[in-house]
Length: 91
Image (cartoon, rainbow, N blue to C red; front, side, top):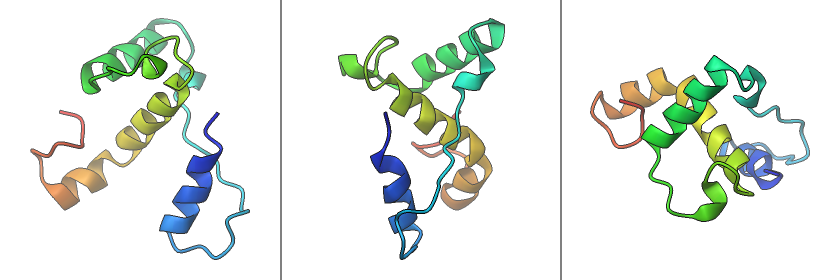
């Protein structure tokens, strides 16, 4: 699904070996109940999705959800670096 993202992340962090194991943050573990619906609601309200592959049943939806997971995980760092009102972090 997102095979190239771990290697790209390692390269950006300066790792010499791109074969290291990388565990991606996953929001799918939340499930499909009330919490899962909140994740979908968050992704719908946070991203303008005009490419069908990124929509709810699209082939690249997992990439979008993985990006959302990283934005949540690093929200404090992003707002610290870019300020409270920036185009990247969640409102």
